[in-house]
Image (cartoon, rainbow, N blue to C red; front, side):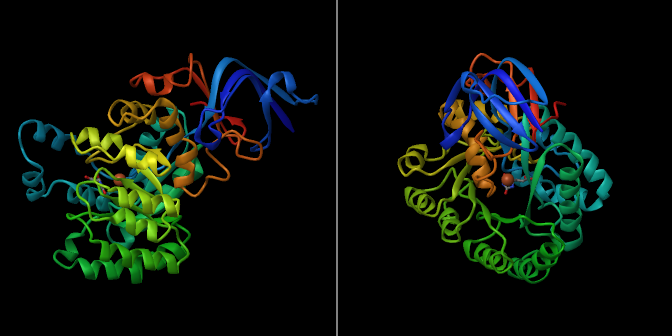
Length: 401
Ligand code: DI6
Ligand code: FE
């Protein structure tokens, strides 16, 4: 059954550019795009349904390729403390930071985590997101990581959004393994990953490579374990210092390396060679008031694909809007609105291993798109927050919330 969507302009984002079609028409059949082009060239056919998009600008559905949406508790109190002069170190010493979210996540039931994650995810959907990646990483033991990953699968089953799950057991050291980081890495590689993968809960594996988290050597052991299970890898790298985690990620053909404020040109060359996507997280940069910018010139010079994501998490990026991230990518990182939109569509899809099926409006790809009542595509990075009038279509069906 064919459906026609017309009276619109389209930014297809093919090849990561606007690739605009003025006065366009889109034909969908089931979940896929069957035809797209100028309305004047529309093939004659019987369309079961015709939608008038009233002059909207149509883009691919937004893709948030890096979130920690499922967690217990709330750290707005820490935000307030820091603004009263309490340091991160003092907060951590008092049991705050990631440790407090781990305690709250372990204490929460699966239903409680589903309810709070559902609320956060609806905010992203209302902002035009049709595909999202969600990481574990606040459980840090097998039962709790399993609980988070099961919630992630449930969110994808119950909401009109495609969800990819990432196991980030190597996010932080759990209290049971204080001063025994290598033993915890063993536990991840020998017990946690094989069990969670066997239960079909994991689409990719991630780790936090940082002086206050895990070393490149420890991360590499996680990568080897993931590879043995046939799982692709990603990496939180060069957020606060340069350990060349992004080069290590490139050596393992990682889907992406993320944060990257402290990456070097050599890292960029390695990522370009492996096709590893640079996922920039301006929300964390902004919220932490960082000053070290990612090396945009090196990324562009070496043709590294750049994605933009929310990094939605309670400690460093409590961000509920991808559009706001587009604005931050432009305002803080000096990306163009076109680069930023490519970063939340085609390049974000590639960062999830979905580049062949998602991320641009082309024949044979999924019919995931948003019809925005805006004056031009740059409006998506221009307006700060708020809600734009839109229709959201996922898998060929109107799912506007
Ligand atoms: N980088 C971050 O900024 C977050 N995790 C990571 O790998 C911090 C997570 C938190 O503070 O809860
Ligand atoms: Fe993150």
